[in-house]
Structure formats: C-alpha cells, structure tokens
Image (cartoon, rainbow, N blue to C red):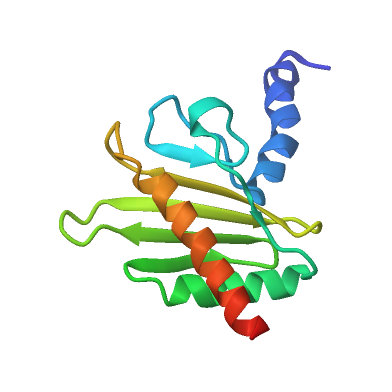
Amino acid sequence: MNKSAHRFLPLLLLLPSLWLKADSPELTCPESPNCVSSLASGKQNIAPLFFYGSDTSQIKDKLMVTLQNWPNAEVISSNDQIIITVFTTPWLKFKDDLILIIRPNGTVDVRSSSRVGHYDFGTNRRRIELLRTALADEESTEAE
C-alpha cells in the first residue's frame, strides 16, 4: 500500500459509523441542564413513553396527531421510527428540539433539549410530562 493510502484509511473506517448515525439521532444530553432524555443518566434522565398493545404505526399516528395539535410545535421530520419536532417559545422565539424514537416493543425513547442557553428552568421536562399526560388522556377518551 502506498503512503497516501495510509492517510485515507482511517477516514474510510469512520464512514460506516457516520452512515449509521445518520438514521438514528443522538439522544444523549450535553452537560448543561437544559436537556432531558430517556437514555441519559442522573438528573437529565426521564422515563420513556410506553404504549402497551400498540404497534409502531399506531404509536406514530397517536404521537403525530398529538404533536400536530400542540401549540408552538412543528413536526419537521418523521419516518416509521423517528419523529423530530421543533417548539418555538411564544415571546422570545427560542427553539427547543424534541426527538422521539419508536421502538418495536412499544417504548418511545425521548429527548427534549433547548438549542440556546444553559438553563431551561424545567421546560423540557415539563414538555415530556405534558406529552405523557396528553397521550394518556387521549387513550382514556378512546376507551370510553
């Protein structure tokens, strides 16, 4: 192998890992307290959403209906497994990102984070808990 090939080999080895990450958004949180995730540890951890007895397409439909009717929310991307939504605060127009990953077992991993600022004063945690409550209310309404 010539010398120039040795320079590019590490880059070629990195490409598959970059391709894998393109389809699966990162659910970890930075060290700042303006993020919660079901895959984080410590204070930034929040429970995932659970849908018992629903398949992934039913779960996606329920999430999409709820998010599309949520004030200040815009679903910017979705596929069979991942929903990405941007929330814009009414007054200062700050943007927060919500990522939902639907798992085949009925679990939805969540991540809600602020794009700017160090503190969010609990906004991202409240958002996930409000989503959890809205989905539970929808389930109880459907059951009646």
